Length: 360
Image (cartoon, rainbow, N blue to C red):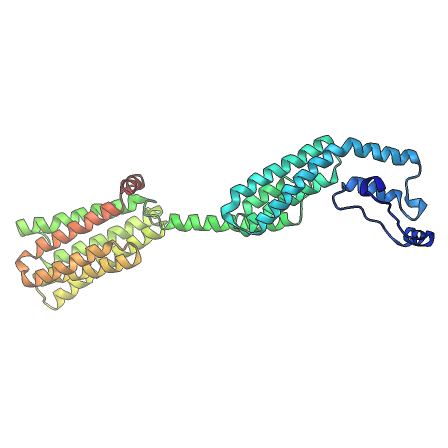
């Protein structure tokens, strides 16, 4: 004890004071004394002889073991200093210092592993590895990366209680990610894009029909034609949705089909009502533009805000047609062309869309 501490373990001005110190006090070594050496000294000075080393040879053997392990203890002590710094940084819970934290963790664990390589039973080194790993795992849990915490804790020989918490958090995070991916897929306009291709193809037909009718004067120029056209489109979409159900597996496709169904149903009802009220076919065709503008506006609110461009186009065409009814089919065809262009641009392949966004 005196060789290490620099003074006798028991001091006093009289013999009685020294004996009292021997009986009552438990002398402590300075904090910088290696723990193994402190344990040897403490055992050698136990008040009860039964708790001391059984012989001088046993004490000598313990001291020789310490001398052999001294290099390991120094390595562990050096790594422990870095561990203190690591614990301080992880306590800040600053995600921006993640790289620094992992660099310190690697250095700490390397030092402790080197200590164990010299002395495999170095308890301080094993405890240091566990403390460093658990500290970073707690940091990852707080910062929202439970999977990293599970990976770290899985490296320990003994599984701490924190691992169960990390596993539960990782499972919850995985479930949340899966739900988000499913939701994104459900709302992704590039999934099952064949459905939108059919809608765009129909829009191309709608674009051509008014122009053909304006030139030839024979296309859908009676209420019967209007009713038949709207009903045919409604029934055709219903059949497609029933027999090709994978086209309506995403939320976007279901909304597209729903909007198209509603549009053709409403257009058919409008044609029937106009016929019953004896409204002219010219006025019926003008009212169709108002209907399409309203449906496009609803589409913009539910699915894609860019459809508002089409809604505005149809409303403008409707107002122009009320003033220039003889050009109503040209106005309708132009609005249909705007609709086709917007849908073709918004529903183009994902690869092409991403390339255009990168160029922009």
